[in-house]
Image (tube, rainbow, N blue to C red; front, side, top):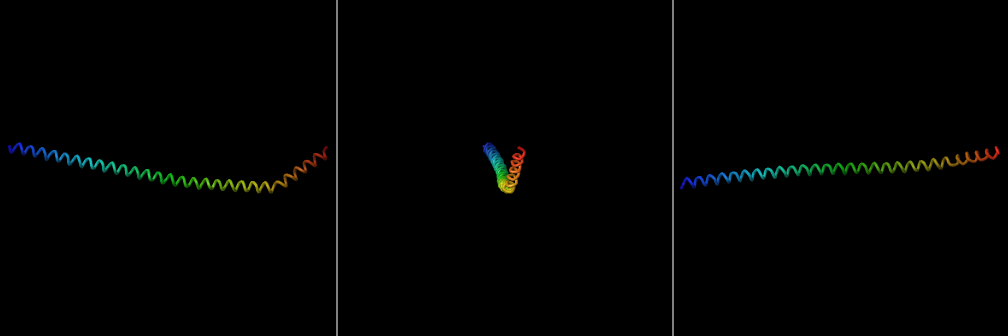
Length: 102
């Protein structure tokens, strides 16, 4: 009878050891998965930060382009104001010449 009890206790100890190993393996697997997800989340956070930085740079670029367009329009208006009297004078000279030729 003592042999049966000893064998039973040995099987129980073996099963408990397997359960402890399995639990440790499961815990390790869960920890590994958690580290993997943490790494992925860190990567996503970095990508979001990079995208935000790039978006801010693009907004600055667009604002700079808008300012450049405003400057060009202003310069165009200035040139138009400066050259308009010359064009009127040339048109008058052409009209006068046509009248004289007729």
